[in-house]
Image 1: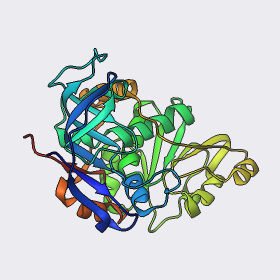
Image 2 (image 1 turned 90 degrees about the vertical axis):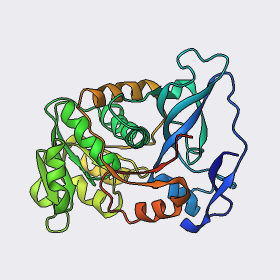
Image 3 (image 1 turned 180 degrees about the vertical axis):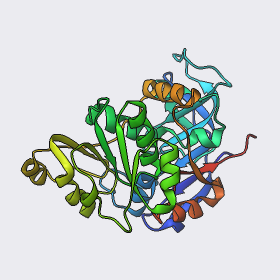
Length: 308
């Protein structure tokens, strides 16, 4: 039987259990994906810990995004056929598995230049960055963007996309990641271990906030009046935003197959590169979560599954 990771009780990484489950059956508007790689996202282990138990129940099947091949297509699906290489943010669950279901509208062709492991590292993080910059950030060419945690999964995509859109990009990261950030498009980098960003930057049009907390509080003063802060970790402080004359928006990523097609085209022409920090076999999901929880990963972590 196909294998999948299951959470029966909220807790630490040890609650991730590898189990045999029946192969899912697609509805008319779904595709069944034979998963070759699934991304690890901080959201996964926050749910696993029970931080969002109001929205999820056990048994919980973690995993938001996958890359693989179409194993079966529902009767109403016209855009994909068996054997197509695809990637998708399938939702908020079900990705850590050898087979996963996705609505066909949430699926896109896998970027031709990526193997499955690298493609699996794209959907949720890249969609988050895209939506933060374009939909909530309303980014325009020539604007100044500050990306916090710029070397992380979402941050790395945000740097590249902002540069592609014509922005002047500044990223905060530890010094060991500065060469990497300059290589993917950042014009300035700030070592958060030795510099306070508010001492060296000002007149920022858009802050991509991937840290929240104390970093967010220090960010209000560097944004020009009328500028915007978009936070991926919950609603920003509206009172502080109002006092600073800044637009404050919360980002909750949504699956979007059309946007993944756009992102894939940018990957295929070399405008966006994928940084893979580590890959683990499905049965090592516990180790993958432990690495993700360190908070010091450059790029993305994925789980991989064999072809057969």
